[in-house]
Image 1 (tube, rainbow, N blue to C red):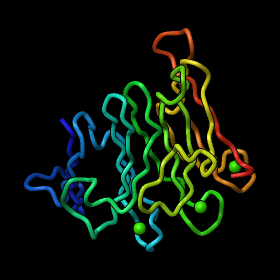
Image 2 (cartoon, rainbow, N blue to C red):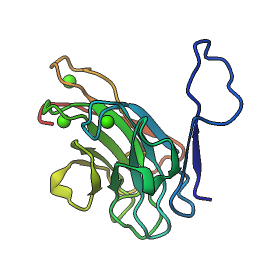
Image 3 (cartoon, rainbow, N blue to C red):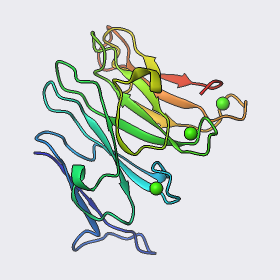
Length: 200
Ligand SMILES: [Ca+2]
Ligand SMILES: [Ca+2]
Ligand SMILES: [Ca+2]
């Protein structure tokens, strides 16, 4: 299954919605599970309107992808055909997944940015949180490491299982981010890291 995301635009009463979806996007590859992470509220392609960002899995040995969809221009279709921007993980030996969250314009250059979690990145499932600077247009590869800001986990930590934007927690006027990792050696336990400015 490649996965599919059906989008129902909310009505004023926010009640349950039935009937055909207003937007439907399908995955581009087997086992992609498109829509495992979803975010709407950043203008990642820089055209002045909010975009939809969808994360998915990579196939075995293949990169995973996050897709930027320009709303409301694109409403239906296979995601790789309708996305205006794509972030591609580095290929690894196993399966990679992509967590995504918009973070606003963290480096204050006038372009919204994106934080990505790639928990299976690295030689020992280190995982990583990666700040990808906007605009996000065309294909942007995480393999171009110097273009992005990286936080890498310890061996087997799988940093980036969850990533989030949490506002300015340390009071320096710049937004801060968090990333979740496994506690190495302790089953079913996670720890949260604050990724604080300055120096985005
Ligand atoms: Ca946009
Ligand atoms: Ca920016
Ligand atoms: Ca801060």
